[in-house]
Length: 250
Image 1 (tube, rainbow, N blue to C red):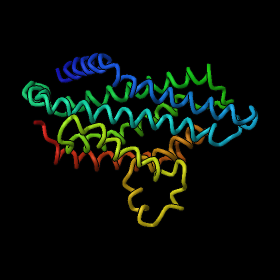
Image 2 (tube, rainbow, N blue to C red):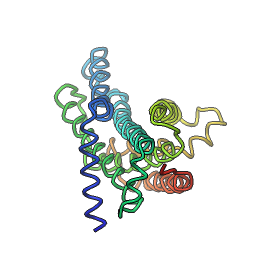
Image 3 (cartoon, helix red, strand yellow):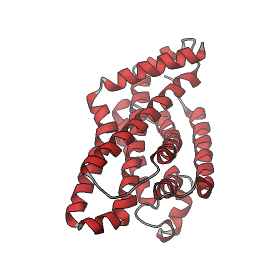
Image 4 (tube, rainbow, N blue to C red):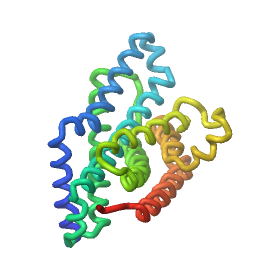
């Protein structure tokens, strides 16, 4: 019964999401468009051999675009939960036979499915318009991105737990999530950051998602990134536990 309810609620959430064009574009279209535009612009400035061998073109840009997919999914989650709370939908759902965990799991499944679908579109579009000359283990990278998204979603739950209204959901979520890119080690090594930021980076999922995605994209074995996977799981557990304490259903 619980699995049937989970499936029905997940399917309903997918249909609701696809009915909102702006939300669908922000979650699916924007990361793919960003990847293509930046990649084509960089390719024009570099000669073909240089573009294919550039670290930015081979690793950093695909990883950054993939993290945009994850963050966009989280922002969508924050907005939807806030709208549901403000409209009284969460209160009504809680009164149904569905358990609160089932409702939250349905949202996680939807976001993970959207993340995988957006990554697939990025790869397909990239092969057609963005010949970077790289070959990556796409299945392993997809798993790594889903693990990263799963961990980042825990911050989304925490934000959704404290955001007062749906009007402020996107701005507050963006103000918290996007600055994480600056201290994640993607563009600037963490060791070169001020000491005061080192403690901050240790509690952020992007700190562990970036080396995991970079390594898997470059062909590293999973065994070399078990520490990052464990850290992402620990971050998820910690933020989810904190969210459970402060989450408001109405």
